[in-house]
Amino acid sequence: MASMPPPRRDTPEQRYADKLQNRAEALAKQADEQSERASGMYGRFAGGQPLLVGHHSYRSALRDRDRADNATRRAIELRGQAREAQWKADKAQAKADITARTVERTGPWQPSDFQPGDVVQARTFETQVDTFRVKRVNKKTLTMWGPGGGWDDPKRTYDRVLSRTRDGVTLTEPERNADERDQTDG
Image (cartoon, rainbow, N blue to C red; front, side):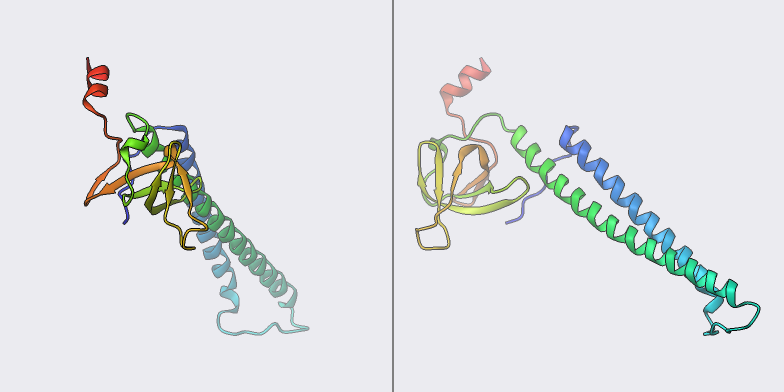
């Protein structure tokens, strides 16, 4: 069950993600330019002309080939840096999205918001969200159904819960009862 990312907000996490994305795009552009440059440098050898040992053009052909090889190596290196930068940007964006979903919440989740059988989306790591079915509602945590038949059931604290689905209705905000609404509204 994939959820829509929250609207972009001007948060430190989002600014950092944008900065990393811009860097990844700049590195990818540099890698493309370097690759084009290297391809152009091989133009002298496009027809399959071998290096002619003893010919007056031999030394300049060697230099041209070495320059083209070095340009290709730089392009490959830049492409690797661009991939790494894109990976970091994607991770930072995931963190920014999760942070935005958490910050927008009007109040904390509480044990009264859950019951066994609910389906919840919970943050498992800094940038990863997983979906679980609630097995038990505890005072400070939710016990989820795990893959090991009970011996490895994961527990998540309420602050890690991002949404709850019950009877086909998904809530991203904790339900507030009438007393709490009156206190905050009035």
